[in-house]
Image 1 (cartoon, rainbow, N blue to C red):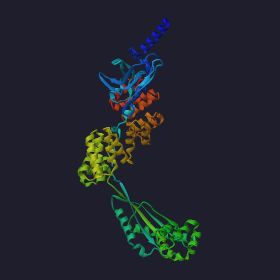
Image 2 (cartoon, one colour):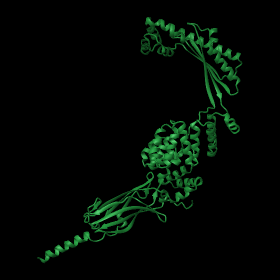
Image 3 (tube, one colour):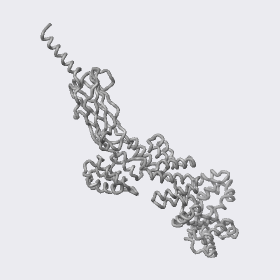
Length: 561
């Protein structure tokens, strides 16, 4: 054999063996790029992707690599993601193939359940190799550190449960009225009208309100009308006379009954009551009423209307008998305010004998304090006195939820739902309990049943944040002004909206200030960071520890905290 040919063949064999038989070398950290860097929670997960740029002449052809992302923290804390396989070109498997001569790119996606300890953590890739029937491990490679966990500030525990409102009214306005009817073309008030039941009751109520300490007459009005037949000039004079005579009647009646405090006596008149005419025709059984109504729609001028209706000779007599007499009247209306107990009276009665109060009065008393323990006591007493009112149990559960006694809260939310299966407030609140237990399917169904409850927007927004869907979360929040809504805007990088929301939260708490500090860090405003972290720490000292390990503030010296 030709000696030169043998040397060439031998050289090719060496190259082949080099691509197959040697062990895989250790991977260098510069081969790896992690996105995002640092890692960031999405909902309750830590997702990301590691991209490995494998250089030329590196990937052994018969090597199969199993890559496992691992987050580590503290002394021995760790969490692993699912494995990714990549392989040399001679391996028969389903991994990503990397060419020996050209090198290549490997992507390692991962998602790890978040734990608070991961704020200070390191991300590694463990690499195990199978080659030629043997298995060996390569040195693990550090590819990142730290987790920004801002999204986890959204929690069902931060949502205010739905309160079932009371119906207590400090002032209840009652309205009483009486109609004084007149004969055609006349304005004098007949004795038969002042003897009518409605007129007698009206004046009795006025005398009663004048004498009662918890009632006041808010005003008396007189509105007088003329039916629309005849000339406008005549009807104007007629309606005005009716107004004057009816007003004089009421002035005399009030003076006779010695009622001097009655708000204000006002009066007005309508010369031709076409609106009232149309309503009465619509309600009547008059033949050809549709024809009459069409005339009203066709003609807007009063004289044209009257002329055309009179031309309907077949029905005009019915109108004159049935409809027009009802439009010749004055209506007297009186408004009477019934004053409820004062806050002090309600509290004193509750302390002395709560059974003397209505359920709505007791539920209202609970709104007079911001002390959750006192609210709880009021709602507990309400549930004892009114065990068939779902609101008592729902609101008792609300106070227990605020106190983080979630089992007790769930018991009372369920009791409320048993009493009122269709009530939306307990449905929403049980959805919050499901969220706390990470039963998101049940929570979503519950929030669907609670549509329309004011607090449901915040609850549904937090649900979507927990699922990592920031866009849907911000749609759900709508215009609510809560910490959670501001958080959604921060995560969407809508910093202008987040600033406006945080500034308009009615009762800012520690989380409000902490989120404002994050906003400051993301917009490069150091004074905003420092002042708001101080205030957050004053209200909740646990946030100091969080801030010191929070990579949102990695560019700031927080030793002063």
